[in-house]
Length: 308
Image (cartoon, rainbow, N blue to C red; front, side, top):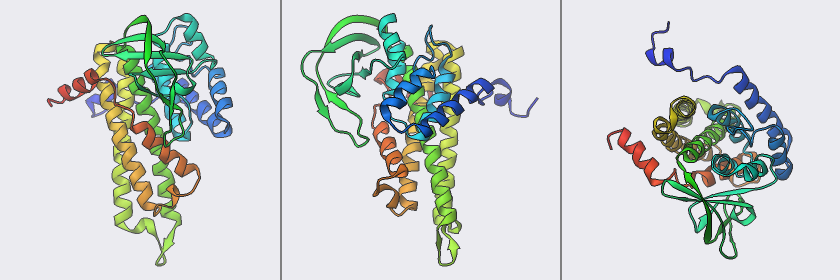
C-alpha cells in the first residue's frame, strides 16, 4: 500500500499489452517514411480500428498508439479517424479502419483533411451527421502540410450524439501532443548537453536548463491527465470522461506549445529554420495545437469542473 491514495486507486502506467502496442507503432513509424505506406501499415497493425467492435481495445490503447505516433511526428488524420469510427456505420467504419478511406470530422466550413476525404462527419453541437460536400472543396494550405479544405456540407444521415467521439478525439489529440512534446524535450536536452560554449555545455546555464525542466514537468502532468482521461473513458462512461478528456487536451496543447517555444529558443531558431526532424515536428505541434480544443460544451465542462 503506497502513501499516495490516488496511486492506490489509479495506475497511470500502460499495461504490458498497451506498452507493446506503443512500441510496435513507434518502431514502425520510425522505419516507414512514406505517408501513404505508413497509413496503410497502421491499418495493418490494427491501429485505425482500435476501440471499435471489430478492432477491440479501448481508449487507453488509442492513447498508447497515438502517443507513439506523436513521438514520431507521424502524419495523417489520426484523431479524426478515431472519432469517425465511433460514429459511422459498419461499411464506412471498415473502410476507415482498413485505411481505404480518409475521414474529415469537424464543423464546416473549414475542415481537416477535407481536400482528400472520402467520409465526412459534421459536428453540430452535441450531435453528429454523416455528410457530403455540397460543392467543390477549396484546398487550404497549413503549416504542417495537411490537406485542409473549406467546404459546405449537405447532411445525409443523423449519427446521434457526438459525445463519445469528442472524448476519443480529445484523448487522441492530447496523447499525440504529449508524445511530440516529450520527443522535443528529449532532443532539446541532448542538444544542451552536446553544445559547448565558453568551454561548458550550454545545459549548465540555468537560463536554459531550468525552463526546460519546467516544460518537462508540464509534459509529465499532461501525460498523467491524458492517461487518466483515457482510463475514465474506458471505465466511467461518457459523462465521467468528458471533462477529464477536455482538460487533458488543453493541458497537452499548452505543454506542446511550451516545448516548441523552448526548443526554438534553445536551438537559437536553428532547428526550425532548416528542413529536418525537429523542424517538421515543431510544425506539426503548432498545426495540431491550432485545432479547437473540442466543442464548446466540452470546454465549458472543463472550466466548470474547476469552478471557472
